[in-house]
Amino acid sequence: MSAAGAAAALRQAWTALQCGRPDEARALCEQAIATAPAGVDAWRMLAMARQQLGDAAGAEAALARAAALRPDDAAIAFEFGSVRLQRGDADGAIAPLRAAMAGLPAEPRAAFRYGTAAFVLGRFDAAVDGFAAATARDPQWVEAWNNLAAAHGRLQQYPAAIVAARAALALRPDAAGAHQALAALLSNLFDRPSLEQGLAHALRALALDPALAEAHRNAAVLLRKLGEPARAEAHARQACALAPDDADTVDTLGEQLLLNQRPADAAATYAAAIARGVDRPALRRQHGIALLQDRRAAEAVVALDDALLRQPDDQRAIAHLGLALAADGRADAALDLLGLHRHVHAVALEPPPQFADAAAFHAALADDIRRHSQQRWEPAGLAARNAFLSGDLLTDRTAAITGFERRLREAIDAFLARCRALPDAQRAGDAFLRHVPGAYRLHVWATQAAQAGYIDTHIHEDSWLSGAYYVTLPDAIADEDPAHAGWIEFGRPYAHLRGWPEHAVRTVRPRVGTLLLFPSYLFHRTLPYTGPGERISISFDLAAR
Image 1 (cartoon, rainbow, N blue to C red):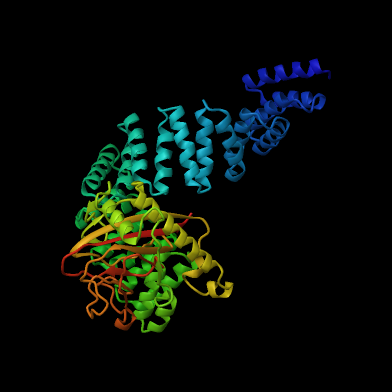
Image 2: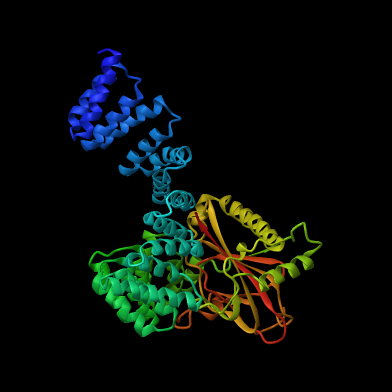
């Protein structure tokens, strides 16, 4: 076949494709390629024919040849990345789709598919970039707005996620799923107006679709935070009736039963779900917690051990396994597991260089916290009592806050380096050290309290390392105080979980300019104090990225 014949074969192949004859198109493309193997268009058309025939692997191979022949062609990169993504190879798709997104600035699908590949790979920052570009290129694309909201949500960037979800809802105001998605995001907030808005959207979703189990589940979470446990349990039960084999729905009901002081019912709920095959490490952990709360410590140890074998970095499982061991009479094993006296570290931070001294730095930092744009009084569902709590401290980019962030990151990076330098055998045998992250994300917030203000007992279950830095402390916090007023206390669990020995409680006197680092699984609280002056501190969570 001559070059002219190859061109004619391609024209015939295109006609065959348009008429639904992919077998004929494939044969004609193969004839053209036999004559002109470097013909990029022939390889692209062959890929289309193979794809119509259901030969995804063959289509990918043809596009790989086209991409090799014309590596800077964004359209080919788009087709090649799309085929790989459709085959489930997000890792192989992301590079060509990134090139397609850059090279086809008016094509929303290229940006959307890049965002999709990144989301599948857990690269949520990149997913945000892709979906944001898709919405900019096609502002009417509801799915792109929904996916942008989901990517922001995975990064716990809830304000941005909520903006995207509202944009999707504006395009489809009567879509039950859009109301449900917005309710789910609002359920992550802590101020009462946002929670009430979330509940309204969950109920609107149920009015549009009464069988939407997710909306019942989110209504339960929102009502829990709003202090309506009976209504929360009712919605959780309806969610379970509609979706009995959904693990998140089972957990919502079980958690509500625990909060409603019915641990035996919660344990039975988790056990029944696991027996039905609704089996996730988190459900096994929750089953163990329910057994512990029901004072069945030995059974709780078995369940929590099993949960940790399945998910060794589960912070709640580690925390409650320590409590279960102590309640079962094995306090030494509990202390060894948790490392209460090994893993609380104090680090002095130098003031940033742009401040004359530590006093000037702390005065500026305290002022920035007092007037922070996200400062809230006693947010619903959080541990602050009679205190102000900021949202993301780093959203206000003042000189003092950015200077603190630099010093904090330096201290964290140095601590991580020391942890990684420890012998492998030492790290492997330690519940904390065996999970030292590589790349990490940081969430930072501030607390401002006067007398009687405090942070109640809690852990940080979605991170690995937590910490507290002290900006301002009242005179009532003293070295020689047997009551430890204003100090931070580690080890003591929630009041309803008994069995933790008093000698295993550790208190640390806070000091201005000192950063405390500790495992996120350690139960901790601050003790109230009486007298003038403020207690202003900054906390952080570090989670693997």
